Amino acid sequence: MGVRSKNCKSQYRAIYELLWLKNPRIYIKDIASKLGIDHRTASNRLNEAYNQGIITGPQIRKRSYSNMKEYVYFVNSKNPFKTYLKYSKDENVIYHARMLGFVNTWITALNKFHLDGEILYEGYRSDYHLSFAPDYSWEKSIQLMKKKIENFDKDTYNVNTIIETHWNESIPWDSECETLYSEFKYDLRSPITPIMKRNLISGQKIYEFLERLPDCCNITTSYFPEGISAYDPYLFIFETDYEDFIIELFSLLPTSCFFFKVAGRLFAYAHIEKQLIRCEGLNMANVKQLHIPLVLNELLEKGIIKWEDHVIVEYFWSKDF
Image (cartoon, rainbow, N blue to C red; front, side):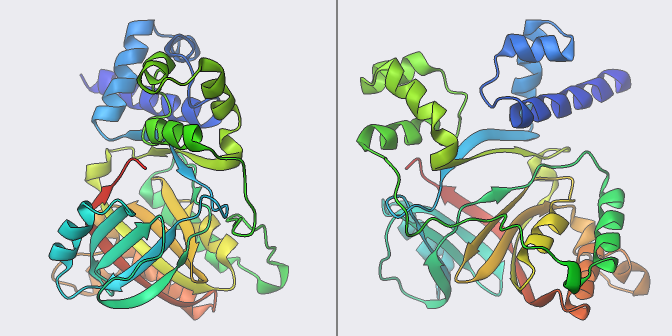
């Protein structure tokens, strides 16, 4: 059983890499061929990876073009659970989350609107960037992060503009594109024929949509080696002049990390092993095990970040549109 489990894990990892590096819509037969297994086993492994939360996606999210952009609020609501229930039914709100920390509500909307509560940050969001999760242990990731911080040199820092914005640009996007976006948003591997029949959209239109998809949307496939439920979901906010460095640093984590910008701040949504960021009954031995807070403190002491805070995401709601 142990050998089989190890083989399964290596196959989950290989499938993730194929979805990311080769083609998010890669055929099962090609996955089987690459892994040297039969078609049925390949299909089972992919389904297992989905069901266990090891792989999520491939999914798509709109880029920040003027005719597709979304507005984000981080707000402290007096009754965050009531707020959560309220916006579950609001078609303008496409994503919202209840959080614990310096802010309790995160809202992404199609358009700006009035809401109650203390707004801490608001603005149009940038494109997203999703890290490619390296095949590292948490111990190796932390070691590499500490070494990267130690070797950081402001004088040789290069801006790569990993996160882009297109707020002043537009891109062709019609009602059929919007329909197809809703169909593929949470599963880019959805079969085409049922989508054609449901929406009376031609196969040619769908294939054209898929071909130009990288220009219109971020394509994301996430990886969580032990399953997403094994980790605590944290949203970090940074004020920094070195955002590419922060993105590269947190991309060393062995779980996928989402990055985006709102109101000039960099946000990182990461899933982290509990013992690396919080524990009970702190003593000096325990403090040394809180590797993520220690990393954040080093970033502050070296002046790489001016300020940082974070929250834990308790629950969220995301809509198809």
